[in-house]
Length: 198
Image 1 (tube, one colour):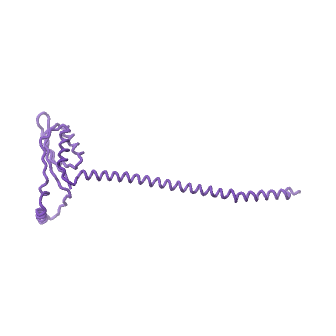
Image 2 (cartoon, helix red, strand yellow):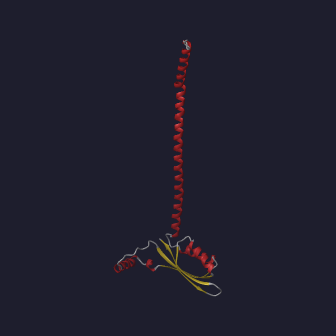
Image 3 (cartoon, helix red, strand yellow):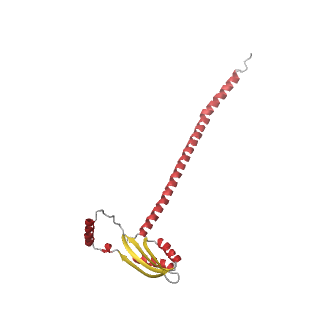
């Protein structure tokens, strides 16, 4: 058998293999490694970006929640103001009565007598109450102003007034509502209520 491969062919193949291996290690492998590193960096960056987007979304939600909390706090501060502001309340309640078609007969306001005492009288009263009571009552941190409204209107107008009174900018408690029929299918309504201040 003849040797199919002769020396020049073997040398050419070896040179070709050496060039191929050299090119692979000198040019191709570094480029493949660089490509692979870039791919891994891109994947890591995408992971970081998705994490940052999730954090941004959470922060945006917190900002919206903070705004809602601030709005709720402002609303609560308006519901129970720091001052009596009875004139503002009178204007609002009168507008609610007349705006619903009711005819206002009278409105009276009184600050609770216990709250208008001097400090000395309050201390004496407190001392007497403590001596008389076995179980202490928890006192409200808010002061109360009672009011009484007399008005006349039909049933729908009364319901409209109550709905409007519920949406006033100030917390209004209406513990007593007395309704008596009058002439021409109208109702005489007496409402006793309370408003509060700090």
